[in-house]
Length: 579
Ligand code: COA
Image (cartoon, rainbow, N blue to C red; front, top):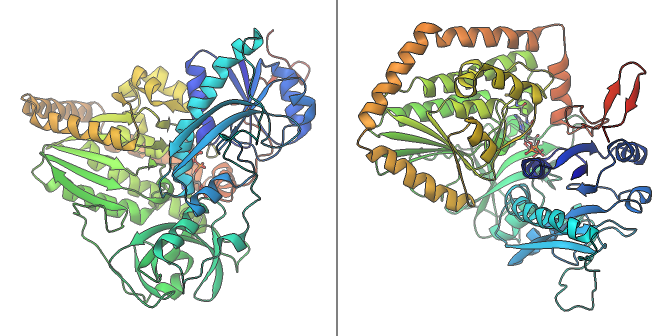
């Protein structure tokens, strides 16, 4: 089928659906929801069989839904309506939630129901819930609905009208959640209540509050079970976060966006409030922790001859200091007498490369970009040069740009079926990229395919990545089930009779590769391009980063996504896709 996505952006869910539907042979083209007339033009050009709206913030124009079946993904159970579906459900707490695919009509979220899927709820950040449970359920529901569309055309399927008289319809219309609904009373609320509010607002819009008497929005909360203090008091700092006491414990606040400055960005809380937090006590935790209890992005533990290194940085973004800390943690892992090191990244993102917000906030964005790319390159080199252990990158979540290439530095890459890879840099203002990608990608897929992947700038599902050899294995299941498989496979690697031989072959290959072209030469060449990106006359990277970190709404759909917009250069007019 020819399927047009009408969407606010090419977000995680849209990328996943793109991968799943194109993988099933459908022809998918994308138009960002910019204006009714632009959407109408896209429909006229593409002449789709079906329109899917994975992530829309406005209604589809009547001129489109009257003529075409438009399937809208709503992150709520049947009957739930409104723009704050996940916010309400996280804040209020329910056991089960769902995703519904409904047909657009004149009333927002009230169209006929094509498919619905449910999932058990857990106390998690909205952004995380969306990337995991919601995306998984939405994928199942959209695939079911698309399957039903053929039956619909033959007249044998009719979608179910929304009927609030039906006792199975448990959802209802909820208003937009406002900041008054989110406000935290630090003198009265428990850790769980505070977490619910911060989680319900995570990603966007955050909870409006005050730190040090300054209005700001708070993000990225983690429970603290040991340290306590006067409710509302700021108790300490750790890894960029500040600790604030609740009535029965405390909460780490990882990120904040000041509201007293027009151009403020979402930053680690101790950077957003650098002066105010500098004298707070630093509560460090050991890197080696058997249990997950104490929050810190970096954690190491061992079992069965395998060392596991977690680096769960917010949004997968890795600034200069974070890369340096990661490198130190990795060097520790390397110094151990383990047989295998598993690099687990974070649960939602394995890594998204250099930290664009920190770069944007720096006095010199070019200098900070340079420091950051060198720091992440140092991590990649340490992984590539590890001779004493086999290394595995286990991608529980997505990896993008430099983060995707950092994963390829490992000997083996195992990706969860739901993980999406974006192994390319060009979307960030034509950035050339480093992280030794010119060594790591061609050795896996060959030069021609490497070039195509970098040029196409499209997301790659784990299954396709495994078929192409970009990764070595695609493993099914949710994060927990994936982790169980990773542990079993890593322990099997560590116990394998041919381990010594594999290590010997790996060291020999590195020596051979180094003789053909030293790692330093790859890095120098890449960094020469990057130097031009950072310091050269063309400001594309700085402009793209500016818009990315500020989440500027799109004003056009990039051509590599809008396949239906093929300029006829002879006439300068848009020409329609082939019939
Ligand atoms: N630095 C800082 N923040 C980053 C980031 C990075 N490298 N990559 C992602 N983020 C942030 C986003 O700003 C967003 O922030 P929010 O919490 O304020 O909404 C959040 O992570 C989620 O990103 P989003 O783009 O919504 O996720 P996605 O799953 O839809 O898309 C990517 C994933 C990787 C395609 C996309 O985030 C991206 O292009 N990232 C930039 C990668 C890059 O160019 N890195 C630099 C070169 S190495």
